Image (cartoon, rainbow, N blue to C red):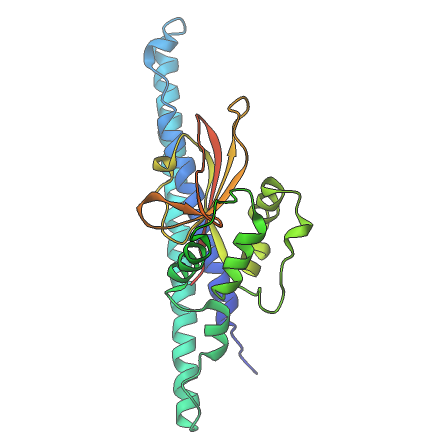
Length: 252
């Protein structure tokens, strides 16, 4: 009998489930905010108000238990992948091999990938006017930072009809996220980046699709320090009122 484990696939699962957990936390937060004042049930009586509060409390509790369970499973899968890697390196060392991890480094890179992505975007933006709707620039930055599988399987910007088309392709498929080396950590309606749980980090790829009648245009850029965004120049996300915001974080 032979046992084989693929730590890269296990970590990919951890990353994708992590994205689901973050989105689940957003749902819980939204649900907790949708509290209906008891006076709204005045015409129907206090019994209905009590039932509504009880139902909402049950839903929030159930969702929190599910997210806790997912996080525990996620932690166990990640620990299993790490321990398998450690055992593999130990066996390779016993046979006089190298320190291993070459394939993993190729797939998952280093903890500095977010910094490298931000640096690539900032370096390209020096003296430039900014192109807040250029998908091609962002794909190039991701490739320059060595993220995902872009070195072996490039993604042509020409295949997308603008930022919205690219966001639909990326946000709707975890395999596409793994291909370019990012994980969706937030997708929802926001009035500003303060609505993003945990905030936007340096190196995040941010997409903004303005709401109707706001007069804005779809935006894509890489976050730097100090709340600035870069895409062949410093660019303004242009959130005016409600907008659909997606945040993708480099996998590491």
